[in-house]
Length: 140
Image (cartoon, rainbow, N blue to C red; front, top):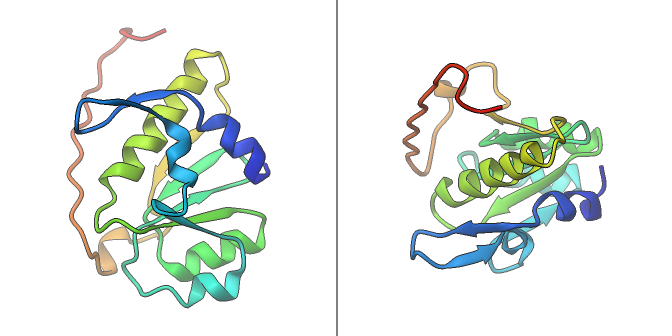
């Protein structure tokens, strides 16, 4: 998938922490994230930089270390390095974009947390708290 393909995926409304409705496309604004495709540039990011990897297969990886992100970029992934100190916003963008795609019947998109086989073993510059509620048969 190209950057333009991903921009189509990240199209649609979301409600931010401030209660205002915005478009998911905000994720591609320079003031929000730096878009990287050069593995050498990605490897220069400090360990612990909040990263989102947009893989060609439709998988979005949240918070991978720069070496993993650089390897994914070699395979055609687009890397977004957030300019905000936390990952919460990018997580919200990713989960909302994938949910909207699933609602449209496109089940080819997924969110994965960490591309590292031992995600707890590398440092974080922020904390992320997730609450996942799983219910059987609620959403079809």
